[in-house]
Amino acid sequence: MPLHLETPLLESRPLSQASGRSIWLKMDALQPPGSFKIRGIGAACEHPARNGKQRFVSSSGGNAGIAVAYAGRRLSIPVSVFVPETTTDRAKALIRQEGAEVFVHGASWQEANERALQAIDAETAFIHPFDDPLLWTGHATMIDEVVRAGVQFDAVVLSVGGGGLLAGVSEGLDRNGLQHVPIIAAETDGAASLAAAVTSGKPVELPAITSIATSLGARKVAERAFEITQNRPVDSIVVSDRAAVDACLRFLDDHRVLVEPACGAALAVAYTHADRLAHFERVLIIACGGATATLAQLQAWQAS
Ligand SMILES: *Cc1c(COP(=O)(O)O)cnc(C)c1O
Image 1 (cartoon, rainbow, N blue to C red):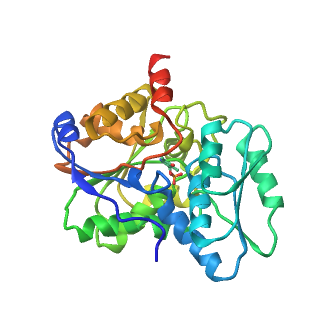
Image 2: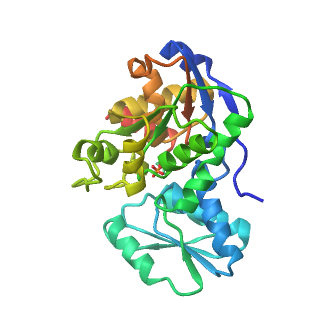
């Protein structure tokens, strides 16, 4: 049995009015660990669990780490998450709340990740946050659900960090005969590694992540994410942190669901960049969620 839920799909009156077209929301913010990531990570954890692995290791202090911790608890497999010193207390608490052990190591994700890799033995499965075909196949189920519901759409808006969600949605569109449907790929300024790859003609490493949308903070996108931009219609759009935070607060009022700026980036396309949707009548937005922000944090970002 999969570890994710089938999430609600609804036509958003406020987002439709803000953008002047019909906006449908796939509400993956409502997954139990707070984001879409459990779809792919659930699939990527069930596979090694069936093959007798005794432990999962993750190096994500964000929603991927929370999803691995959740999957481990559901599968009765212990989980260790290695995070850098910059990981917030809230994120660590959410990982521990799922029963996983948190190890803090190093100033950045790179160092935490190196330590995580050292902790792996033959009995352990390392779960990557975005660059694994098993993960993409799991994420693709969100498109299967939309198609099964009979809802038609002529574009999909989603957020891009390392590109796992992009790869999963692309696979979901392909396997439902929708390879012609364009994807609008949103990032925030300061975390725009897909936009940088498109400009450079290959995945390139950003010098630093300066956006508050840390869940989009992969310095370099997966090779697969770049390939998708070359093989199907993908429109890369970069929004400001401010637009992403404003979108989160508007969305909270409009739909009573609190999401991270990582998700706000995609919502901001409808709220403030609807010109980029000019060619489309019915748009599906992946409300990917994110559990690590609080209302107080969103308000503090908006005030700064
Ligand atoms: C991980 C994450 C993303 C980005 O997903 P990638 O697969 O890394 O591109 C977007 N939003 C939220 C809330 C996330 O947790």
